[in-house]
Image (cartoon, rainbow, N blue to C red; front, side):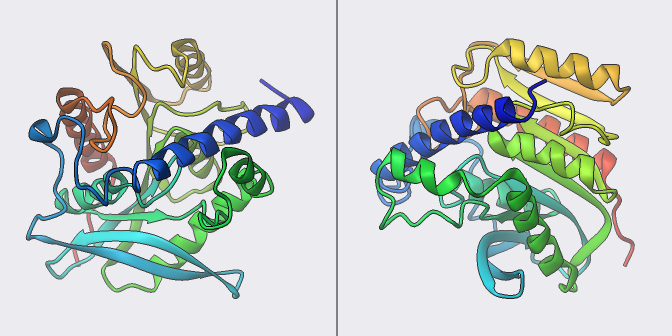
Length: 286
């Protein structure tokens, strides 16, 4: 567990890595969106954005009554109230696999909302990794959680959203935030983390679980030892946790917009995630 300046330095290092990743995505034309060419395109088995039973698109909501935050929302087209699942990205929400994951949540009968916790970045201005790193540092974990709660407040006003229970899915840094949200909110009933970033004891102090973690054995961004230690700490706190390991998979194996996409593991991990959410989230009878 890190404390005080050690935690801050760890976070600075992590955000610097994230900023570099964002720059890399931008260099490829919004992570493949503009060219519509994905790694192993003929093997993409997880894309559901064109599913006719769902509707999706960008949304905006207010933060502190003055700042406008954008996000991406997907939900079933059919009338009714659906469980809310917050999707927390590890970097930009414009990468299509994030939007697709929201859509996949809708196909499974949920509302998928990805708040843009990186709204402080201005791509036209912050073009280098160093510029992005400096822009991200002042936006703390607590600030990101406020962004997420602003998105939840937006959903509370929507007739199609049920707040009987809430699920949260996070990728990398978003995985850390997913556990922090679960720890700080009594409404969260299920947490799914794909290769989560460093988590402190304070981050999970009030987490009740259950938690599902997906980790590739060849992940070069998140060490396996970090996940093993996290599992031990969760179990020590009596938090129900499942950890699934994917042999030979690298960081971002769910993302078909990336070179490390593994369609077999992406499909398997998503099936496990949907089964987990269906079990843990309450379905409104309205």
